[in-house]
Length: 335
Image 1 (tube, helix red, strand yellow):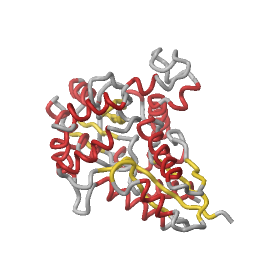
Image 2: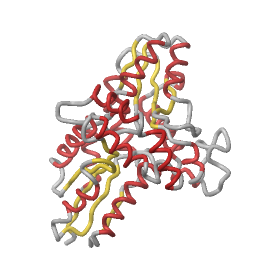
Image 3: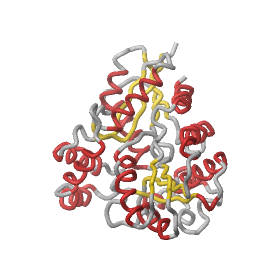
């Protein structure tokens, strides 16, 4: 019989909250052709001249503000998720990171030490499709298989942005916060340059070319990050019973001068405060595990921005992490 294994994959983290470790991590991350989608030489110049001289120190300080006793929040929480899923499935299972450690290469080779394993279910823990998340993770797994001539089949879970189980897990994990007193919920998704969206639209005439592009059905939606995050938001709001005037969408983590998806989370928080919103909840559905972008960028920086603009309280809604409903869903997929 076919013996199967499971490899979960997330983005990654530096090995330590120190400038040198962060520089090494950022170099690997930003030199990925799926992240900065420019020719290698131009990418090298941008990363070496404009990012690595200053950003690692600032990022290291940000990591220090959220670092746990056991390590990076993303790594620690991902390991907890892996252990929770492993308790429910009778399959070899590992967790890998696209950048940093433990690498996809290391974890694939670890699973393949068992010569009877002939199929690996590869679950990229990104609900929404983007070249800079899903494509690069799959490409790396395929590179490792080819490099080491591994005789295994790679079965890939597609982006699950509208999967009923994912929406249900997201709502269930959020429910205690929805029962609190609040004025507005901001869905803050990781941002992307607009060119990452438009270049995948083979028609060249739909994505970001019309105001209702995300609402009008189109083949491009299969790979359109913006459509998919809007769909997640819509389905969440419907299941949670959120009135349209109580929530909005924004995009965080902009890098560089290219035009990115908007509005930015920072600008939206300022607008909400100016409109008289005093208590805001922020949910980050693009992340299934809390990380620097949620714990520091939103819970610390975002709160400062909101309060300085006149707001009173910003509450970060934690990611699903190892919430039982999310763990059960992942275990079902594995089985």
